[in-house]
Structures are given as structure tokens and as C-alpha cells.
Image (cartoon, rainbow, N blue to C red; front, top):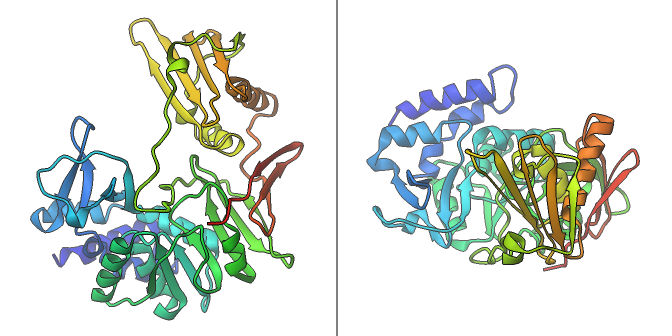
Length: 387
């Protein structure tokens, strides 16, 4: 297993080159495989999750652990890989992971870490990010939190075994936070910026925020009024949603009415059917302007016909059907006209050559309400109810 050091050096050369990145030594020094001894992968038919045991598959273990662009799923539904049974098929949503190393470093770079800064690492996961922070800044400057006591206990034990000793606590990321910090950096996404982050952020401190449901990444510095100001970054980042209990709540789906109903309104869109989930930009703006959307799309290879469904938790839905680059026939219902919202965004892109989100100004009120503006475009991420 000594080969891990060579693999870590190769990974560091890709994501933190020597002489160019202050993260080089830390990436070379953290044995990521020891923090993720077991993980889940999809079965061949993608119907189930299968357990992978590192010590039993050493080559695959090292390949997975030192791939800079690979996230390792460590919890499915309510089952952590540590408690999973080999040969058993597991179903459910991935609910914890070791984030891909390239993205971990990208998030820390957005935080603009400096020596002596106290950092809150939100979403301990396997502990890999906390280990990097501890080696770079020192154990006493790093606090890492996660909602799952089983997960934090395992991560803390493994961090101690590899010689790093950050403070690891079980804590809800949207609730009261333990202490105050110069930087807050998450490896999870949330539907709104918790007011507790702003309370815990020291004067002049900086936070990074990932919005649930899209690739929106916001960075902001604390302002004297207790809020923060920054921008929507041009970089994209997508994380698992933060849990607030043992498991995720049930996910709403496409309602039956959307599958075969006539809807309240029928019209012909001037644009072809599109699958917004495949477009980072469309998906990102929709996640901000209509959070909680469920999107599904399918195509008939023989006829070229495509149908896309969009549904919102408030009961709104839209169904669009079309062929090739022809116009879409749209049916929709509910308090929101979801396909009109989508077409308005596409019209903005055709008019201006881009969507208005990336690079937009972000102003965060002390209660967490976030105002996103660019030119004449404006959107709001409402404050989250205190937990």
C-alpha cells in the first residue's frame, strides 16, 4: 500500500502543482484511501448500489481514492458503507460522500484562506477536506461539522489515525453554529443561506455558499450591518443537499396529471423542447428562480419526438412535446407558468448572448435573504426558517 504516496503526488501535480499551489504538500500528505476504506458504486444496470471494500480490492481502492475527479459515495439512504453487507444490493439516494478532490480545492480557493484563519468546514463527509485544512492551517484552526453522529465519529477516528486532529462536531449546518470563524466553506448545498452563518462569521470574514438543486456558487464578505456582499461565481459547483435528520425527506416527483392531463393552458412555444437538467446554465437559473423543481425528459429514437416534464412542490407543472428543432406544444397548470419561465430565460439568452446569473452581484441581508442582481435582472433567495 506504499504506492498511495506516488498516486497522491500524481494527483497533486494535476490539481495543486508544486511551486504554484500552497495545497501541494497537503494533497501529497493526506492518505485519502484510509479515510474511505469502503464506498458504494452503481451496479451495472444502475438499479442498485453495491458495496466496494478497499482492503479486499487494493488496486481499485487506490484508483478510486486518488482520482482527482471522483466523488466516493459513502452512505446510501440510511446505510453507511461501514455498516453495509458485501453482496447486498442497496437502494436509495446517496446521502454522504467524499467530495472529488479537485472540487474540494476549488472551494477552498474561493474562500481565499489565509494563514491563521479559523475555518468552519461544513459537511465533514469522510474527513478528507478537514485533513487538508488541518495540514495547511493547523489543527486548532479547523472545525468540521456534520449532521450524522456515526459519520463524525468515524471521520474523527480516522483523522486521528493519520495524524490530524481538527475539531469534529455533530451539528446541523442550518442551525446554531459552534463558535465564530473567519471563513465558512461547505461541501454540501442548502436551499438558502442560514442566518447562523452570518452570525458566526467574524467581521471581514468570507463565506462560500452552494445552492441546492443547481450549480450556483456564491462568495461573499461580511459587511458592518451583519450581512454580506459578493457575487455569483463563474465556476460551477454541485453538492448533495445538507440533511437535517437521519435521512432525506421524501422527494416529490412528476404528478400523474402532468403525465397525461390537459392542464389549464395550452400553447405553442417558439422554441424546441429542451431538457433543462442537461444545461448547466438553464438548470442553475431555474434553481434560483423556482427552487425545488423536478425535471424529467425522454426521447423516442425512432420518431425523434421528445417530451420534457417540469413540476414544482406548489403543484405547478408543465409538459412540452416536440420533434427535432420544431416548436414545442406546451400544456401547463398551477400557480406558476413553468414553461413560460423557461422560455423567458431562453429569450434572454437569444437577446443578450448569455444568461444573467454568472457574475451577478449578491447582497445578503443579516437574516440570510440573498438578492441577486445583474443589470435589470433580479432574483431573490428567500431566508430560511430558523431551525
